[in-house]
Length: 311
Image (tube, rainbow, N blue to C red):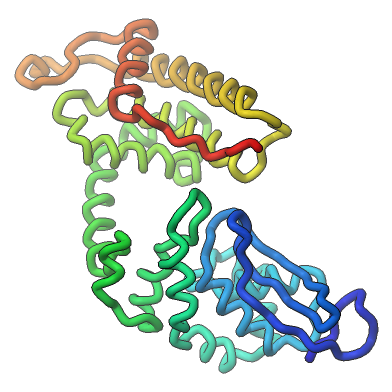
């Protein structure tokens, strides 16, 4: 029973439920008169966080505009610092630290685990990574079934992250140079995409054939495309059909190729010992750098998934 903003001064029976419609995932509250209020996100699609949000709502006596959002973010396993101040701390103040700690340590129900595993078909399937986080936290017991879905054990995640950090550290000087050239912070979402592309290239052994400069330049192109895809997925910018979307992606690709090629040409000077290695030994111009990056983009990232579907 809770008071609900804009629904009068009487207590109302509220039923919090985990919500998902194939696109948005979050929390809904159902009322006896068949009405409901809903809050959700396109991404992440975290059913475990949503479930904890419903448990938090059971201890909140007044549901206001923004309460469902705050409950969801309070249920996140490792909330961002900004979310701590905006959502988590105010909710903890309302429900009490002991209640919050108890909810965060609750065993994740089997129904929620099955809702994740049994709905892995389609483009907007629930995220799997929260299961790894909960295994680490001790709220889900590891089972062999998870391996079949590609879910990683926390120990494997820790080992991969260590190796990835070691790889990124080897390219740090060039990554910082690229970030400066784009006038963006070294640590930001855009550079995270660049790092992700770089790790993919190293995983594909591209570093055995191409110079570090080329890898960073190509990663920059992929990073720009990833940002555009992500932004279009969250907010299509008024794009109403696939042709408009494709045109925006192509425009981004050409601009990214031009910029990365210019950066590559500005810093590339082959070392005197480069003839000993199977890597580029030419001094790049913007023209030949663009040509190379275009070829490598198709070689290493041949099918970049379209994230927006127009009906």
